[in-house]
Image (tube, rainbow, N blue to C red; front, side, top):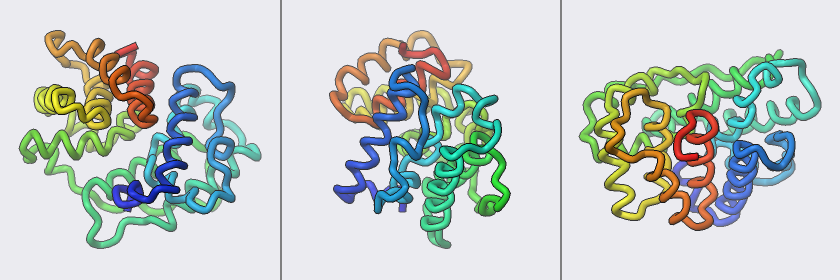
Length: 238
């Protein structure tokens, strides 16, 4: 669902607005962040927008985990309601893709880690495979990984991240190909995964590459979000 929803024009506009707010918060501007401030709960497509953005809807809270796990406030109560609505309305079905399953798990993991304890609990985690991170040919791996870049977030130590960490060279190949094809969103997503890796070769030129991607992408909010996350959380491309 998360992939399909992006084609709807009103939803795309809302996703872009929220992504801009997240990117601004990650760059240290705009004051304090609350999901329910940048995405009004009464917005008709709010649950779908949260589902599309996944864990990135809560990414600014990872900047201050102590504050994020403090006592409940009106804002965090509203944020929990938004995330719960997204998880409930758009839970993966039996035929869900691995990307949909993992984006759902990422949002769920971020909610558990970054929002105060929910007395009502969160939905159960759906099973999702990791074998593809070892067996996919590098072009397919790069495509899937770029769609799941929201999981490249501190504190989300998922099996997916561990599997992708073993394919750094292939992610780098995907990054270079995406830049050459001017696929800025894919390049930014892969660059974010590479920023979180410990063994990226200097010859890749990741820092200058991320700057280039951001400059060339124009006004693509989700590209800006990925590049801002790579810089703020991992010190790359700033």
